[in-house]
Amino acid sequence: MSQPQIHPTACIDPGAEIGENTKIWHFCHVGGTAHIGKNCSLGQNVFVAGGAKVGDGTRIQNNVAIYEGVELKENVFCGPGVIFTNVLRPRVAYPAGGQYRRTVVESGATLGAGTVLLSGIRVGRGAMTAAGSIITRSVPDHALMVGSPAKLKGYVCACGEKLGDDMVCPACGKKYRLTAGKNAEPACDRTEGA
Picture 1 (cartoon, rainbow, N blue to C red):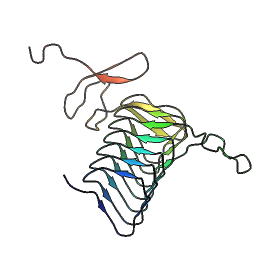
Picture 2: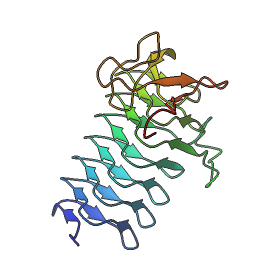
Picture 3: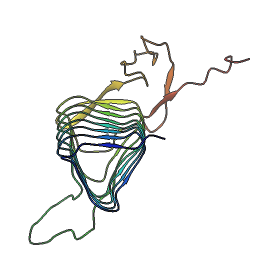
Picture 4: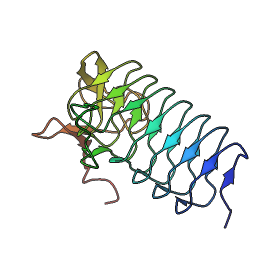
């Protein structure tokens, strides 16, 4: 079992849970009730608020703030400067007072550098957002989202390559099919293992 590696400039509040073999770099701040899984990496100047959750194997690049109500599942990649929000209509005179909206980024998703996510949405499993995208609504599994506001521009394989029109990955050959909810899921080849 390997202890977390925490840079001396990082501030870890009492009560924070940090998994084994996680690396926390320069000038990070982790709140007291935050949960960070094992084998994660938090780049320089990352803030994880109390109540936020970061799943095993997740990589968060420099200058990202993860607020209460945000949950990153396993193996999520957050590019530099990704912006999460947790209140739909913030007002200084009318504070939300712990009434934060839940935002979930599902396993294997990639958020490109500078992506902005409005609060209360779900980013599907294996989805990918292009750099600078503004995500204003929930994202289907394996969807490729581009633009401001982001629009569906196709689907991506678990390996990260864009799927062809036939829903087959040109790199690894994995096959997908669309569901009624615009999600892409791996197609089950019943001849495999027969």
